[in-house]
Image (spheres, rainbow, N blue to C red):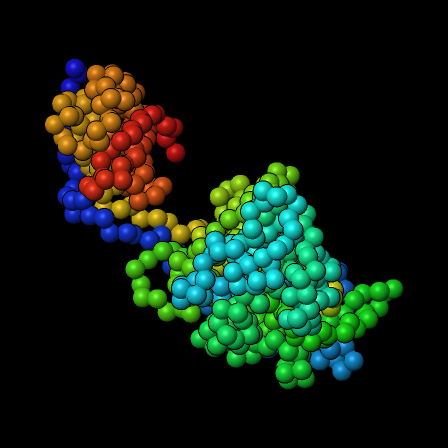
Amino acid sequence: MTKLPKLISLAILFFYSATLFAQSYKPPIFTDPDRLKKIEATFPVIDQIYKDYAERNHFPGLVYGIMVDGKLVHTGSVGYTELANKTEATSKSAFRIASMTKSFTAMAILKLRDEDKLRLDDPAYLYIPEMKNIKYLTRDAAPVTIRNLLSHAAGYPEDNPWGDRQLANTDQELIDIYKKGVSFSNAPGLGYEYSNLGFATLGYIIKKVSGKSYEEYITENILKPLGMTHTYWEYTKVPKELLAHGYRWIDNQWVEQPLLHDGSYGAMGGMITTIEDFSKYEALHLSAWPPRDDAETGPVKRSDLREMQYPWDVNGFNTNYKTPTGRVYPFASAYCYGLRWRKYIDGMTAVGHTGGLPGFGSEWTVYPEYGIGVMSFANLTYANAGSVNLQVADTLLRLSGIKPRQLPPSDILTQRKNDLLKILPNWHNPQASGIFARNFFMDYFPEKLSAEAIPIFTKAGTITAVGDVVPENQLRGYFIMQGEQANIKVSFTLTPENPALIQEYHIALVPKQ
């Protein structure tokens, strides 16, 4: 075999000792110390986007907020919460947020699960006996479970706008639906279809399991611990000067819509809150990322939040989607537990929810990899707040140029990189190194590995530097060796053993950048 003493010397030079076999988890981090300043510089543009959008779409009033690293760093408002008295909208104005309520109901269910008071895969009839004799579309249908209800997979038909008019219904009216029999559009567990009835049912299950109404349970176990003291269920409890009235745009004028009282369907869309209060809830969801060893401080565990945000029920692929700024931006979508999820073509994840009722429209979204969130509430019937929020998020990311969190390399990835440097490019007696998994030499052969690597190193020229491992996760990554003529990319994957060993390896020339 050809010997390359310079390369071996450089490999030794770049080798450094790490804590062998360390398995400590290194969470992703932000590396830009000026990221907040860069974000703040976009606020004048963002304010204008919201102002123009509200005027163009005839919003009586609009309030909005921007979250960064768990803090409400910017708020704004346009127009009025009550037109007759020209009451100006502010971050303290209380808007009905409609279906944004659903994630609070889902969170309460997970908290009760953690208290061992229910199981997500339990049939719902264990808690609501009236559901026991439901007639399904087919005899072989599985019963509706709590998990089905959480992810809109119960088989109930999409029920907007019917469900929006049931807000003030009593518990008895809800149960009567089950006594008379539910009409199914699908068999349970076989597909996504948005159901307000499903979340009203979850609200009733909270009551049956906890002995408290869903309003009381959510208030005591989620709202109060978060300091959400200006969040309400019944509109008559809101200070009059803060309550946003709802409107519909008809014949070039605003027509006020009647506010419905709180009732059994409030679990799907009855919450009333402010931008300042809701920011505390949005901060909670951002706090779930990255996974880490810190003490738990929220009303539910961070793992519960990540479970809520997981795409349990995939429901769409939009390959032709364009952002409001005209950029082609395909995505896959799914429903989680009371939350919506999108994964865009560049890998960015967005989690949040819309809200729409007669008189109101709202939306919030967090972008976990970037540590940012947006929210906006409007008092116009079914106001499309999601469109402007996406435009704002897209603008913020493009103008600020901030980058997502970077995953630092784990100690074992760095160790294995250094181990590989000791045997490249000649692959002399690699079996003796002890760094390769049992499968490796059944799938790779030293002679062929050497025959592949030596020409690559020759074409690259003298190696002038070796980069850090770029982790794809804690056990997979690659590193770049910079040559005078070209660069070399070495990729490898480790096993689930402890210590983790190399099970897969690839090497290739890559252009110099």
